[in-house]
Length: 258
Image (tube, rainbow, N blue to C red; front, side, top):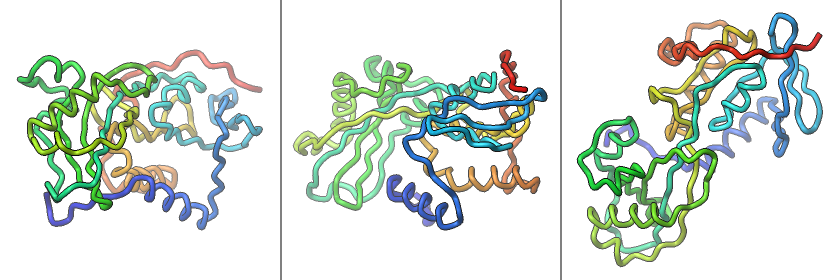
């Protein structure tokens, strides 16, 4: 760990960002699915269709995470982001068995596609230890990586493997009651870098997605980069490696409005 390392609560940070956005004039529409994006004859963005009606706009930022591909199809763009499932175990409060996060190196190898020397049952599901104490004195234990489409259900076999792997490193965990388990989907790209980019084929359409498990920690800088792109300013970090066209995808036919 570094002296500047920090931990955030993703739920509280999300509410904080939403509250601040409202204070600056943003209007958030929850439970309002996007059903389509309208383009003109030049394939420029003109409006967004939602379940609550049309929103006229010249700019769309696709920050839909694992749903980014679905939104991209609305403008005829194939966004190479796929859902990658992961599991977490939440253990109850216990005598202090660790104040710091612990991550086996195999976690990074699994995340970035390296070859591990490990029992095939762990490798099959990308199981590798991540141990994280929380402010409430619970413990978060992970992790796993699977490509199973949009299935976010908990797989008990994977949960058992995560527990087995964790006990190998922390035998005392075998005595700690498990509170709950959950699974979620990470937006994965083949080169493990997000797409933070304008889409040249569709003027006014931007993508800010594909951060896999790092989305909450990279949210602020991603927002800053997108704002700089919109204003035509120099970006605060190099973005060539984050461009959409690095994948050389070709647009699909798209009906336009007149």
